[in-house]
Image 1 (cartoon, rainbow, N blue to C red):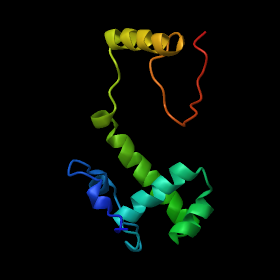
Image 2 (tube, rainbow, N blue to C red; image 1 turned 120 degrees about the vertical axis):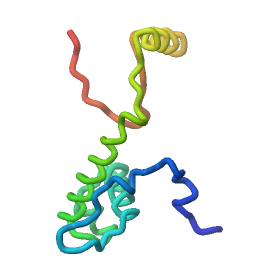
Image 3 (cartoon, rainbow, N blue to C red; image 1 turned 90 degrees about the vertical axis):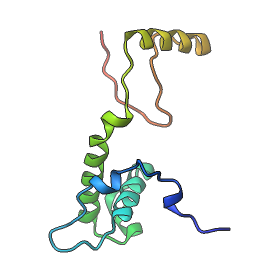
Image 4 (cartoon, rainbow, N blue to C red; image 1 turned 180 degrees about the vertical axis):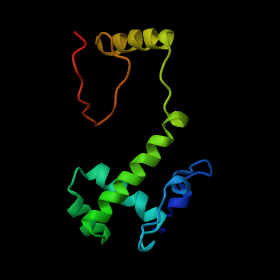
Length: 121
C-alpha cells in the first residue's frame, strides 16, 4: 500500500494552512499540518484535549490553543464555502425533503452532527 499524502487531497485553493497563525511565543515546534490534523482529531473523536494531546504528543494547553486557532481560521473561510439559501431555494428544498421523507419544513441536514435548536414558537 502506498503512503498516504495529504497534498494529494488538499487542492491549491485550500489556503487554511496559510491563514492560521502558527507561531507560539516560545517556538514553532508544531507544524502547520499537525495543527490542522490535531484539531481535526479533536473535532472527530469527541475526546478530551488531554487524550488528543497524548496522541499528538503535545501538552493539553497546546492542543487547546491549536483548536482555538484552527477553529478561528476555519470560521474566517466560512463566507467562501458556506452559502445560505435564498427564499426560493428554501421553498424548493422544503418541497424536495417533503417528497423524499414526508418531513415538513426541512431546509437542510448535517450528517452525524447534533445541533442544539431552540423552538421558534
